[in-house]
Length: 227
Length: 227
DNA sequence: CATTTATGACTGACCAGTCAGTCATCGTCA
DNA sequence: TGACGATGACTGACTGGTCAGTCATAAATG
Image (tube, rainbow over all chains, first blue to last red; front, side, top):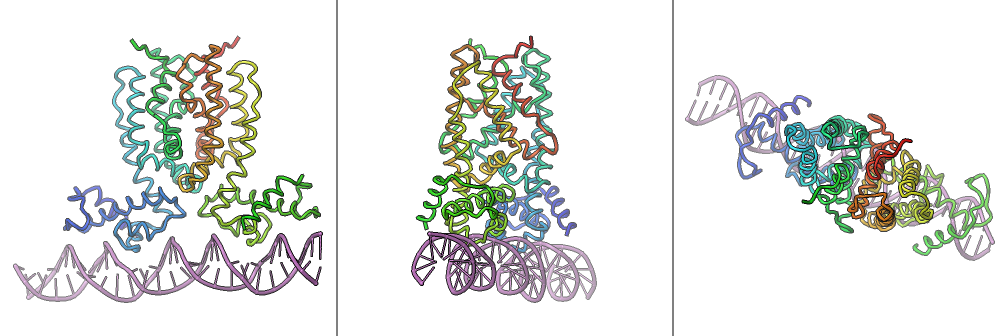
């Protein structure tokens, strides 16, 4: 059982994945096909879990959406619960990779943060990744494993990185509030709120997250000279 | 059916609610007893929904916790779904009442916000109310009625109030960032993040929300003279 | 005693997880 | 090369259990 999972994962990593098409392009390699199916399941499960939540999601629906029989799901995952946990991991890993590939500190700290946060907003707000954040907030307390993983892989790293940036800003004299380094959350908070806001209240009062970000940075770095 | 609901609600509003005891103190008034039971159900349901989420909560458990038979729940609520929606309303209303009973602007704006936010943190963080916020974030997308209600009754009012405070601060020269009035979210964000943080990550890295609040206010109002 | 309110056993729908059977693919041998 | 048996990925009908909602009956009330 576990052996199969490992094999599938290995295949996924190894094969160049010849085509995105599912039925259209018949693939010779068995393991490759298996990996493709696993991907389809992950994708479908993601969608279903996000829109219905863990408890209300039916495995039949996931199977149908993935174009697979229900039994197939159990070839790749032990049960619904561990499927959810693995799924979150699978989706988050690439995000972590991106975080690690931060550019070296060139230019002002403000520009650094602005670029970084701007990308974050663009890639997260209104996308599936944003919903994933909401999903983790929603299901976290019932899935300590997920909350742990998310804290370890995303939150603590993000905080450490932000703290380093803040300290750099302080050292360079761009930031005057030295206590800020103790609470990187303050810098990140508006971006998080923006994500949640969009998925809950966009309909009532859409939020210009980028503009808000700019105002927030003005608060931290002092108002920008509009020369 | 609807008639009964209305009647129960009216009774709840009208009766002085003689005693908190459930079985201990037999009450003569029928409507009063009904209201008491309704309260017990609301309380129990709250607890269950918070810990398990909407879909995973069993009405049998709510009934047992409330010390009531399952059928009784259906004397007060149409079904599970509308029960959830009414419940959120019932619990939020007192909070709104408190928000409306804000003291008149005396003292510095900073002190005003500090006191207000301090109370907010004390009363929300780590309490059932905090979990309610998380619950709304979690279930909001699946219960537009809940999200709408919450936006209308809490978010929009809170934002308006905060905006007024910010404008007052600007008028008095305490706040220099005039753009801040356009995004009261920035002021509120750290408090919200603190609430979510505590219910997800308290175990990994407890957060001193009050200290963070102080740092954040320093950022907005300028560092405090420690004379 | 009539009426309102409460009960909890019951029903039917629903769904996670199983497993006997099918069939495409692969290695092997003539 | 082509045929053939072994393998195991895949299927989907089925099972056992769960749970929202109902309703006949009982208790409380006035």
